[in-house]
Length: 270
Length: 273
Image (cartoon, rainbow over all chains, first blue to last red; front, top):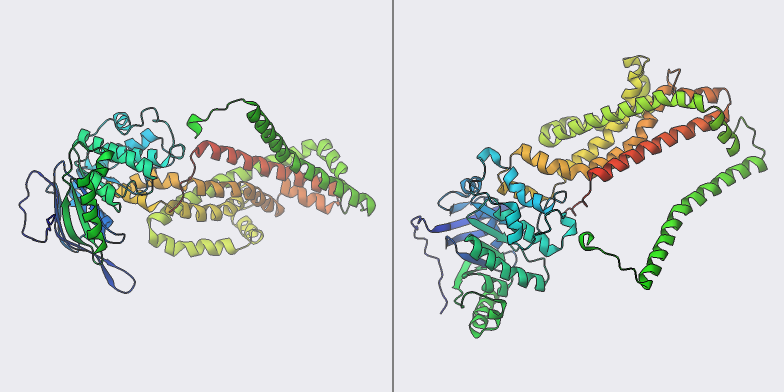
């Protein structure tokens, strides 16, 4: 009933509305003895302003997929386009923002200075064309008044908020988030999930969000891309048709529970 | 959390704070007590075994010498301090520059690091005569010896510090399209500071050793020369007083660098993953 498998590798015309597009993307790593295929023949398309969550067991290549789009790894085959550009070009145009699993803040910089970091570097490619005010962004992530705090004075959740503000400061069109709330406690994670949806609505940025939590994937995404492991492939793309705007309570609705059960079944048969 | 910390002065809190204060005083006073005990032990050994003054002086004789010949001691401290500080600056600056070159050009590191290890394996007392033959009898060879003794610890620590960057921070820099120069100045240099300062603290004391060893061989002034003179004259009190002045200077230099570290590193180093 929810089968929207995208195994058809028919070339897709680059539409102005497509933010991220992968066609038959394959990534291989050389380990000590043999080549490991991390991703095989992954095709996906995310429209501008869309929110796609990527769900899968650990080691299924979901982070690799995100890193492929961010130009942190190169494809062995297939093509990847971000707003019609190759990832390296999109990166230099400041179209991509990346949020890591650890906040990765520079410990000697205050919250505000960490947020401004992207405005200070990569300048040989020209100043970011859509730069935003770092103070405004700290307010957007709910950290007004914490501008001068150093990272070690902030909690894990607050540090991750700073790193989200930092990822948005250069005005990216695509925000890639690699298990950003994976290390946080459940209460903080729930709150940040709701806030992320608010930030998404307010900024209109396209988000690709990697997680291994079924509830997080279904709550955040307009669609959930379920991956299978060894090698990493797209198993199914599941649309999440629950009423908007979403509040945490939606997770108790029968529709949401049914979707979560379907996702769990998909993961168990990976 | 520092930003929200506040102290409520209830009775229980007051008792707790008083206990904390007592513990703090205990921590401060115990080393003083330890030192006093060792001085007493020293005095007792000299008295009980009737140690002759040319073999080892009693502590109060050393104290009297420190007071009575303060002028001579300070006149000789001045050149030693100058040599140590100049050597410290020269050796550490060179080490930082070489470490930067090593980190940027792997080939340079592979070619020259073994040579640095080789030079470091020559004992400082063997390096000293070589440098005196090369640089003459003035201040230059002493500065050079102090610099040599500083160079290696700082080189090793700085190479480690510049390389020990959080790999995820490097990925962040890549996503931000940072240049090598930007990565160096915005990331590597700052994250190397804790490593650099541990070397700067060690070499603050060793630079003084370098200067003194340099003065042992062919010098008329300086703490090193005074040590040699006092030894030849069996003036054990002056010898001990000179040593005490040398260590006081070392400790002061060390504490100065420690204070500088507190100013430069106000953040807690990130755990390295």
